[in-house]
Length: 80
Image (cartoon, rainbow, N blue to C red; front, top):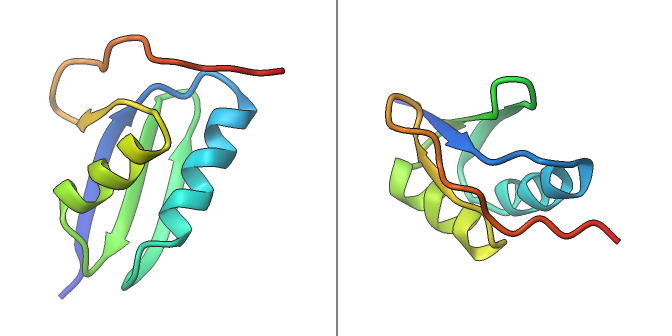
């Protein structure tokens, strides 16, 4: 059975989104993924846990929290 992981992530620019997409695509056993820039929401469906997805997002320098929790603090966003 597939899990649905919904996270609040600081999505400040297109480069941030690209980094997150590249990281998410590398997770094994994902079925679908979606990034909603307006809501700063990342949704991943598959045989994954919330902790796994948060760990991958942290590796690219972004903060993430469960969708129902407080908004993540500002994090590094470098667009050159």
